[in-house]
Length: 272
Image 1 (cartoon, helix red, strand yellow):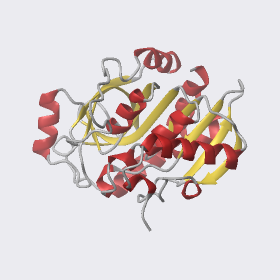
Image 2 (cartoon, one colour):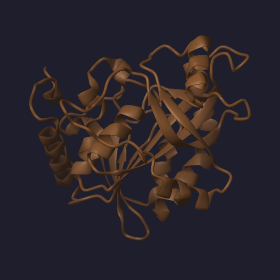
Image 3 (cartoon, helix red, strand yellow):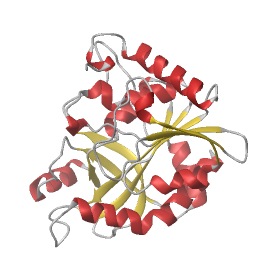
């Protein structure tokens, strides 16, 4: 069966159809904030507010079943204690799955179509700063898009100067003043980076290496949303870490840290 986003149709009209599905299935007409939960961040949904509805992502136009353990495959509508509606996306399509960049950013465009003005993007990633340790959350201050791709099509020129909102990073620091930050480097994956690639990223000004987020952030900015990015440092990157990398290590680091980082994320979203 072909996928809606594999056709030349306008991806924004497909995102609007997805937003209409979410409104119908959840009974919530619109959302204020959207949160994509990456590896290690899944428990945050329990703390953000009262669950209004949880739906399988596959029931929403354009969404696919997640290919990766650690991603839950649901879309949830929550209401915070202050009465704001939060769309929690537990279904992320990664670039390395080979479905094309339109499907990678479909969740973000759908969030914008539901009315969300803030997009919170989270991930599990490798750290380049030796002072960082597994289980540490850090803010994303900027990114290097090393995928050689873009969600923007045609002559679409979007300013990226304050892509990862300085205002929202200050909100996060009002919750935890000790939060460090760094530049996120999105590689294509799915292989982990080589030590030489990590050193390249470091030379270019990178501090975090991963396989998501940058393309989504670009699409969020195109849609007019304010972006906040969080990485959970699940391991030190290749050549920085003395031991080989494994996906099991990433999952375990996420599990060990999930209580602390989930409360952090919930507290930050509560102040946005």
